[in-house]
Image (tube, rainbow, N blue to C red; front, side, top):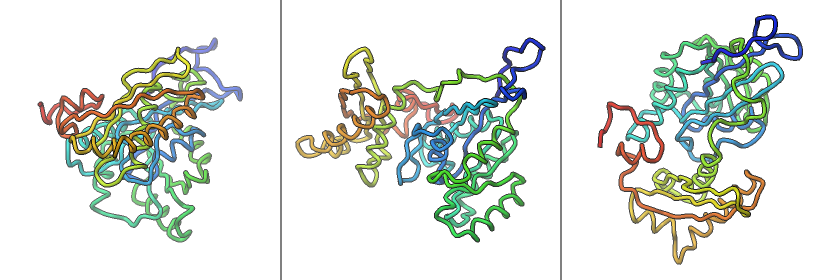
Length: 320
């Protein structure tokens, strides 16, 4: 929630250049997998912060992005897609979404205008929304791909059923994004800014570099491989030129290590090259990427490996 901060000389919160008090707070982006939450976050920020792939369930940990304007600072919480959890990793992802919901000053439910309503798939969303105390806005996304009449019907139904105002948007094309961002700002509490105005994210650079590698795994490999691989940056030396980055790809089985490495190292070489280029674009500097692959048996299902990789695991689950 919003923190108390310094007052101006008159005893009130700091004012924007227009004379109005500034606003600041947390906006949680919630929804089913693959509805475009990460693309919407990137659109709000005007830069790529959260990884995006055509595959569902790419976001595993929440990403915090900060949008600062003259009058407001919105701290966006991009959360994993809400789903029926089948393993401990997915339980951790669901817990991450619920924690963001509890912190939120405003909740933004993201819907896919091209996807027919699925009662079974909507249950995790409804259960999450039942927990909220914050006001609700709804982003009806992908309107550039949907029929206008289908969008209008969905907007009307959502507003009637949820009580939240719905905004047709295309996160990919930028359509309607500014209007939604302005509505989010209006819903935030009066508060001084919580971060320096130039900050774009709260996570360290290492987090985003590891995510770029994982994004490339999703792009380059099929079937179960992307969902069995997690990347962590173990070492980073920014005082060197090029910047030295040592990253490890953790897999569940030795056979998956062989697939990632490929014949005579061809697959890992291609993966490293593409990942390094993304890192260089992100940092604006040359990078030397030292990429390793290590088996961590059953890491998605066991508490200790998940905790080691930085995931928060609910206490009531697997204690191994």
